[in-house]
View 1 (cartoon, rainbow, N blue to C red):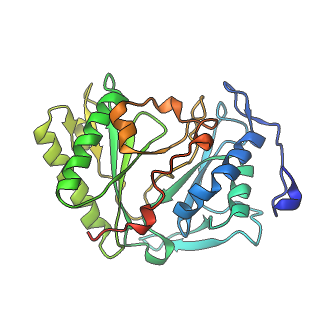
View 2 (cartoon, helix red, strand yellow):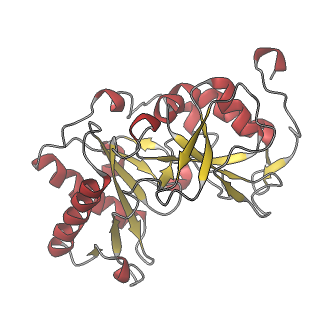
Length: 284
């Protein structure tokens, strides 16, 4: 890994970031370099929130919205004023490889993105369903619910895309033309969740029911301006260095284990299930 090929000046490359797997910051950076062609198109023009672990995931990490002190002048940022008008946050925009490498060099394991771009902050270009199983329910039950959701969306004319959350659940997104409000998107996701809960007793659509053992929550709450989700292909702060990985629906049908999608395996995947997602923005 040569500094001659990037503007970034690397630091502490031998620092262990994932102690269980003995994965160093150098390996973290290499992962993001290799996955750049897949992650950069999704991140483009989105105000990122980073989850940094400078001393490894066994130590305290922190979420960072404001661009860190000392951010290079060549890193693109954008100031966004809160709805109350009381605060301004200087978010990082990651549109190129150098910025992605710089973010990784900060030991930013996770990259979280909003569901809208900086040119249309109030108009989402993704609708988001978070399929969240409560133990003893597992990824198996979450997969069953995801397939039910896919079929329901297909019946009303929507093509949906799925990824692992990198934790215990699954994320389903619909790319849409950014001409409707977050309020409408949120209402739509909630409505679909309510319908599914009437069809299957294991599914819940209200936050108050999410802690009931064995239930699957169809979460609609992240469909709001300023809320974020784990970016596709983002690593997660998990001992096994798992990745929030875009999948084909056939993989969900066959059955998956989230741990099989990690820093070592995802870069070897030839499948690109979300290859055309940004060219398939649907009318909502």
